[in-house]
Image 1 (cartoon, one colour):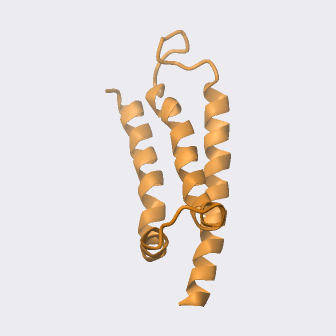
Image 2: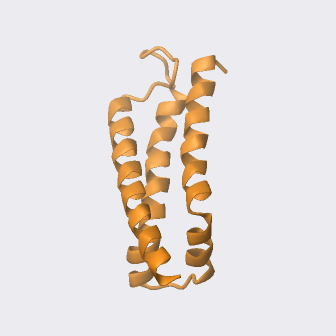
Length: 107
């Protein structure tokens, strides 16, 4: 594995771990009260699903880091994957901050 690809996977791991480190108590309460309902998914799970979606879109970008554009591992829409991953991750962060503020008011 090249150093560029290793650095990309390091950043991706950091992006995955950051929300857990910042909001571990909020996540514990949210997943502790898990139940199947549309209200629950929209109001409490949406930030975390957006964060996971952003990381999932960034995965092909990390796999193709350091490869030549003619390589079979280089996705055609690499910039699109990076853009969607960034947008979804940032939306997830914004919503996670809001969920954490509401949680803090309730506790």
